[in-house]
Length: 102
Image (cartoon, rainbow, N blue to C red; front, side, top):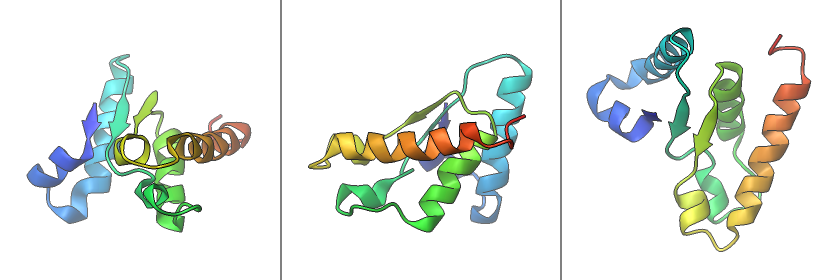
């Protein structure tokens, strides 16, 4: 599990993205499943459209080879938790249909 909130406590902010990618790469190399968690589509707790950085973040998580994504606030306290899942599904499917995973 890449718990990004915890990672932010232990790594300098400028290295967070690199550390996340490194953890995913090492896990995949060792044939371990990887779940990335924490504030992936948090804007959907109150909004109807994910922010551009959130879309890019989720895209990179998929391109890096993560096996799963764990939402927290997006599905835990949102009035429309299914909407967050629907938006994530649309982004994930677009990435999977692209030629970038091959």
